[in-house]
Length: 453
Image (tube, rainbow, N blue to C red):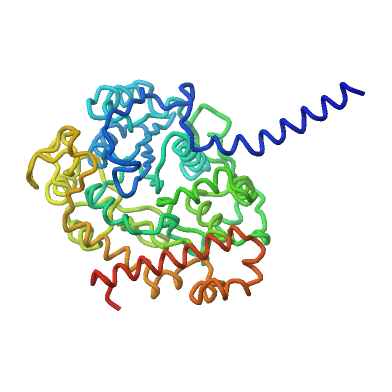
């Protein structure tokens, strides 16, 4: 009898341990065996708990032959206040992957700051398959456990920034931290039959040999327990929503992950469907991916490569990122020269490496400048774009659901009468926080004279 009681107590204690202790370990530093392929050290002096107002965590994905574009993008994007995780597709040769690892390890700035990592155990990524989504979630989990940040940004080696990181950090400094920039639509149109009903199998989930997705002859009915949404595969996700996707208190993220395993181009629908079907997060969405992209002729499935003729439109869009670019296209030199103040082989201009002038080379870290932001006109333009996106005239109207917009606009008292929100107290708190934060953000920009109604 004593042994039985002991075993029961031991099992209950183990279950309690996993329920309470393990989740708290999510955002703590990862162990050496799970760490990305780079030695971690951080010798940069910090004047406070956070030297910069906001921090971004980047995932940069690259495929076979992308190492040149990847290295250029990394130097254009780099900032000591952010974090960078690089993933090379398993389909790329080992020599190319090793070359990227050595490039990161041998860079003196990367080594000094210790905020650039390369995923050692690579994933095989299949075009239009769910393996791209699994790679994104993998990176998100690694970054959640390794460092503190405010937003997660996924880019490919074919992307390029249109603003310096100093300008991006300053522009986002007043944005509510739980806002998610996800371009989305509940009107799937032709995608209902071409994406929602077909069933595919991605060999990359179980094979080390790269091949195309397989199409199952039988189709499935559209789901009735949740609504499908679609949009851009490129997102800027809050830390809160990222944690919800990885260890969500609801089962929705896991159910949808299983559903999208057999979905064509799942990265263009998973995060949209999760957030728009979540009571706690559906009203934290800003309907934009903050990318400048031009598409082919309908049905707009493939982005067109950008060139010099697109430069003016890119700049006038005020968006911080653009895609896609061919390797060493002349327009990249123009962006480096005129927007990023970046000299060949150097970093983009920033206060952290300033030599005392707007046009000076930015080649290395100056410790005494850590925490300094050197703001340019692009920051003001991006702030204006963010203010417009989050204004009361646009933010609510363009969200995936407006069923509780009225509650949000009239405050917490009205929310108490909303039966849907009553079902989840934590959802109610998040919705109140969103309404208050957006109001304060808009009020701040109105005072600064940057919002024109």
